[in-house]
Length: 144
Image 1 (tube, rainbow, N blue to C red):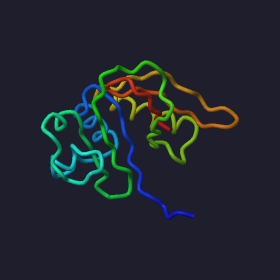
Image 2 (cartoon, rainbow, N blue to C red):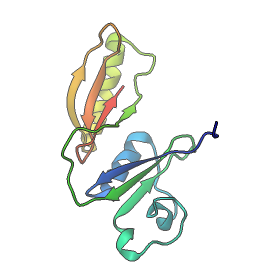
Image 3 (cartoon, rainbow, N blue to C red):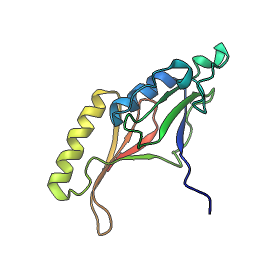
Image 4 (cartoon, helix red, strand yellow):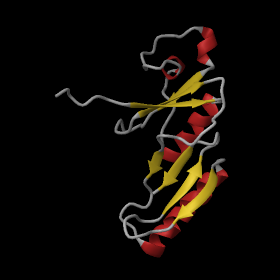
């Protein structure tokens, strides 16, 4: 069996820097210190052609635990529901009204950053409550 590999999550978007800065705020990530690193898909730090420097942006977990997020400009807009999405785990271990209060408080902060609240999914026999949201370009994610 192959060893565990690092993963990077890549977002197709219209405005890479705007979306990256949104996710930095949501997750406590930072923009890498070198613009060259943030503008290359592999994080190699090699300077890309000038036309690519404005077409990509990245952010990283300052603790080194979470995956690198890479945002690349694409010409087409979003046309369907995401097949993969991020769950922002703000209510881990909480249930009932306490969980809902934490989700709602985080939702209010993210809406102030440009996120959109889509719907609240209330707890059932299998799952705790979560909030479905969209980032600044309409990509779905959950507050869980």
